[in-house]
Length: 202
Image (cartoon, rainbow, N blue to C red; front, top):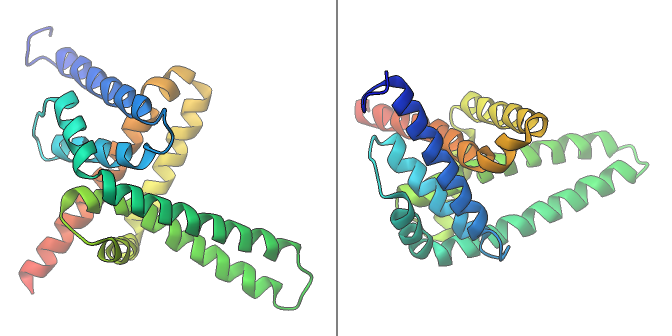
């Protein structure tokens, strides 16, 4: 049971990996402005795990942080601006008294769904291949809407994990970010694989 290939050893190894990645991510986010490069780096490490690779976590994380710094900063700031604009428009819609209020409400709800779909896929795409900023955002929207049930399941999983983490603070502080990123990339990888199969059959 305690052998190198035993279940308890593998479980302990994964606990250590997630805790270490979570620590690296949180430390990288301390300057606040580096949140987006930190997310790109964490997604890159998760990608290698899902690809059945065993990277040197700290070294790989720092390397990915540097490689994706510029693009992740630009894309991240753009996403934040769009998110604030959508929130402002949605808030304004809830306050107006007009015949078109319901139509506007539905429209902005749909826009928010598209927005979250982009947010969930932009970083997995960033570490999965090279794209310009424009291509990255367009492809993130396409992938977010492709096999939308997977996007929806991803959102539900993240919400459930967040709810559990609030109940169990140790999970929130030591595992929430790394596990959330891993789950998100895992769902994205399923889409990448299925799309590759479909393109291959065509």
